[in-house]
Length: 361
Ligand SMILES: Cc1cc2nc3c(=O)[nH]c(=O)nc-3n(C[C@H](O)[C@H](O)[C@H](O)COP(=O)(O)OP(=O)(O)OC[C@H]3O[C@@H](n4cnc5c(N)ncnc54)[C@H](O)[C@@H]3O)c2cc1C
Image (tube, rainbow, N blue to C red):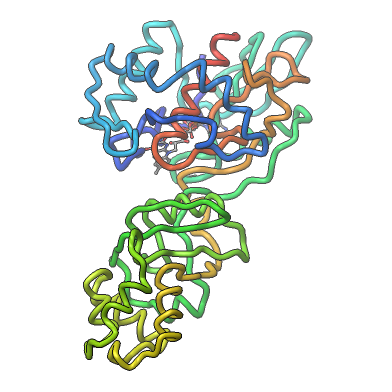
């Protein structure tokens, strides 16, 4: 039996992957997850693989394709994944009770007693699958963390992850008005590196490599952006050093015109390329390949695709997801301190941890 607080199920699945649900990734490994114990997810991931999910999806006629880097999406809509999961519930006799507010969960002897506005339920086991606290507008609540604490389990402090970054006040003013402009780059943060399209927003930066970097970013630290990935900026500039063309015009070929101009204005590079000396060209090249920014903050839980942190993996069995010191109490999915990178890893963790738990029960 599933007790669901809202009037529907799978709200995040419906909006996931821009409505097409990036439901798994062919390259899933433990390295794609952030956790205080990076090895915790290994067992569940090997017990339920991307192939397992794909085979199930095929069995229900879900059409899918690989977008890039192993990311598997629905060809139709995310609704197909939801329909599959709901049908699977029907076929296996799982009842979902909607609009259920849980007032209290307690343990009496070997049984759990769950008091709700829809009645009181007794069960030998209880599985907390209430997700993280990102996107509260889709019904996310801190309920899972509260239950963990109630039963004496440690919760690793949470942070928004896979979330746009906000400029500090100075950069906000410097790069104001560029919202909507995008460029290809490599973004580095805390020894991790992600490539793809970066997008200026009203308040900072977004796009896949920024979202990825945000999961590793901590307040006060910097991100480094390589604006000329795959090129040697110094060699490129040196090759043009006899030209009378303005530096920003030269850069317009690789960055957008507005961004190139603003970037050169901000760093006082407004002159023809032949008027820079070798040392100055070196400085410009270094900044082009490692444009350091000190974001002020993230856009917070409202815009974060996931919540990092959560129920401490030290408290749980990696084979079954059962709490080591509370028999019959299980946690699965995002509520646990296991956070996937962008690319289908978070849903895959939800499937794999759920599968491990289901098998045990
Ligand atoms: C916009 C967006 C896009 C995303 N896209 C992708 C993607 O393409 N690929 C990917 O891998 N991941 C994606 N994610 C992340 C992924 O959706 C989540 O990691 C995943 O849904 C977590 O599954 P879960 O079952 O742990 O929790 P959830 O899917 O959050 O489900 C938790 C459920 O518990 C219910 N609930 C909450 N509190 C209570 C309570 N007190 N009582 C009863 N019920 C409660 C909620 O209503 C909800 O139905 C995306 C997330 C967002 C927000």
